[in-house]
Length: 181
Image 1: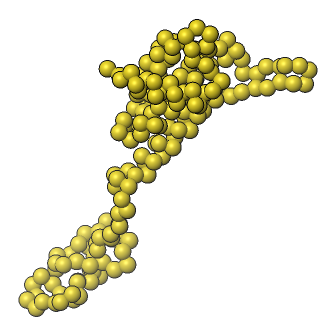
Image 2 (image 1 turned 90 degrees about the horizontal axis):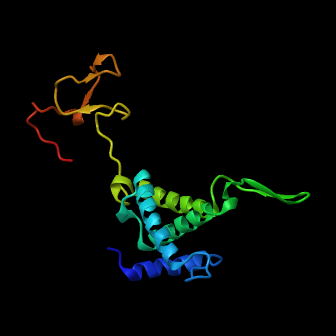
Image 3 (image 1 turned 120 degrees about the vertical axis):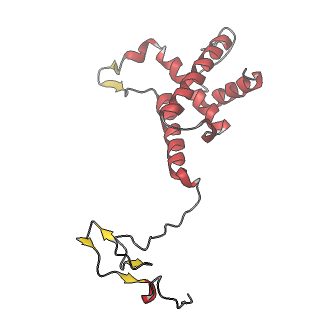
């Protein structure tokens, strides 16, 4: 069950972002009942959009969610406009305008979701922490190859057994002497 005050907060954000669309009982562009229907549809669509972009619901803030819902509501309202299907219009001789496939609110929604998706990808598996990458001593790209045993290593990048391996500090596991690091 959605808290009624949350719906009022979304309506307040909607009035801030889309001042030209009025929400009133009878004379507005959208009635309060119509706004509630648009809001329910927007919540469903936002859930699908987040899932498609692999954004967890915990990755989007409350304010970002409210703004995204407002963009979806405005987009659905504009799609109900009879002129929505026209890609270009002529106002007078020499005066015409055209638009792209998406409405302004849809472009704003995509921009918002793109920035959230990028932030999620950047944080990645590290959770936003800086991780120092370490090299493994037997890595083929390492300048010298080291090993701690006298057993020859098999390397497919170099023709079979590596006879030129260098033991760690010239010491093998069979050597009883210890070396301090």
